[in-house]
Length: 200
Image (cartoon, rainbow, N blue to C red):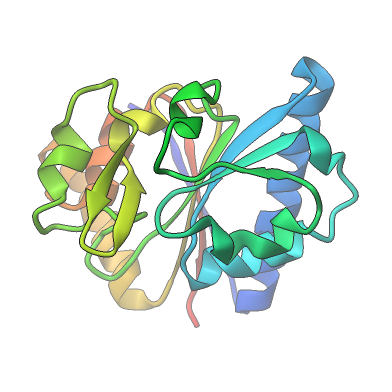
């Protein structure tokens, strides 16, 4: 069973700054070890805020590829301006991108959904679909699948508020029996997870 470590923040700004610094460290370490880095970043409000903060880090952005966990990569425009490669979920670029990810950053919602994986029609194809399928269509666009996270070297989950926290805690306790997408991902992932949480 993986270890889950909670990092508590009194202010959302502190969470954003720390998450960006930690992602920057992972990216820098990957570049030093392998010559490049590839990370999947959430495109919700928190994810976009972290991406904007991350873009201020002095990294060799030309050696970094970013994949949005769902939605449009335009939401990560602050990183695009740095010269990084943004890989859309549609088309062949994602299939050609090397895996596993150096880091996956997800944003947990009140209902336990992460990325674009909710509890509706997209749940089964995104959670239980073929292992080779890395993205699926949703009513609002595209999302990475659970299979796309296989082998990731780091997993970071962002969240805020008491309701979402209770959902995540329950999902962790339920393990593979959880119906919440975040619970299924945490139950199947093979790397320890860091959860960054703000009460506000």
